[in-house]
Length: 80
Image 1 (tube, helix red, strand yellow):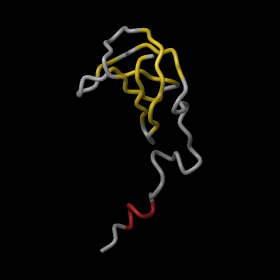
Image 2: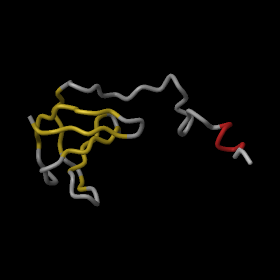
Image 3: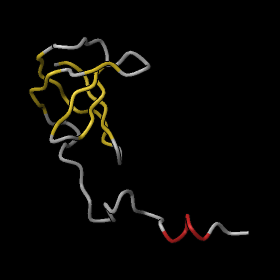
């Protein structure tokens, strides 16, 4: 049996539809402040509300990062 609810919502998340694009790009550098720590221990920065995970950081760090990978709901970066 096909899950029709899933099929009807395919490709969308909270109304973001296929035209949604993240406010960050892979390979681009950003100045950020680490606001929180994720369960896995990575720092969490936000760029226009979009979450970026940054390993080896702590809350309060003001750093320059480079984005490595952009996913639908978050990105992963590293300290420059």
